Amino acid sequence: MTGRLRAWCTRAVSTTVDIDRPAAEVWAVLIDFGGYPEWNPQIRRAEGELVPGRRVTFHMHPPIGPPIRIRPRVLIVDPGHELRLRGSLPGVFGGEHWFTLEPIDDGYGTHVTQGETYRGLIVPLLGRVIAASLISFQRHNAALKRRVETISTDRQREPS
Image 1 (tube, rainbow, N blue to C red):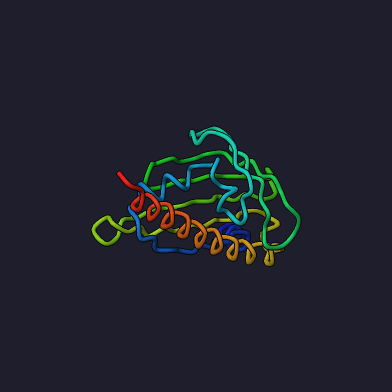
Image 2 (image 1 turned 120 degrees about the vertical axis):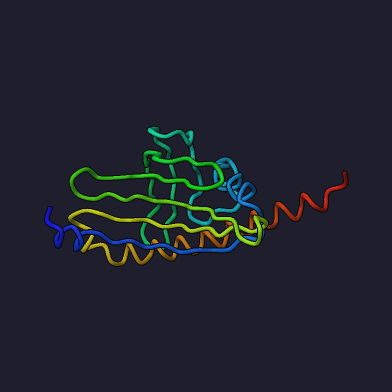
């Protein structure tokens, strides 16, 4: 694929959120697949182990279209820093999804970036789907923020 065609067949979207809790607390919620049904508006069920090379399963309810099941391969698991997954329809379409966590406020807060790079011959035809994924990421980030900050606040209130 030439450079010009590669650029035409590649789109990336990302969104960020600042969470008023340390990265370890954000990470704990992000990788707790069993807790997803309690807070995640898009991923109603998640299964599998976050081990590089393995696949995980997400039962998704995107903002547009019917519910879908995806099985991306885990690429990177760097606790408290980065989670990266890749899914594909070989030869046609692929997506690399990531979360990065960066400490802010002397480590008390966390800057979370969630994004995806889409590649493949059908990417130019997926404008609505890619735009919807950005909305989905924003909803996910807002829900993640509420969940992490609520759990942390509840823990602080518990008697010792």
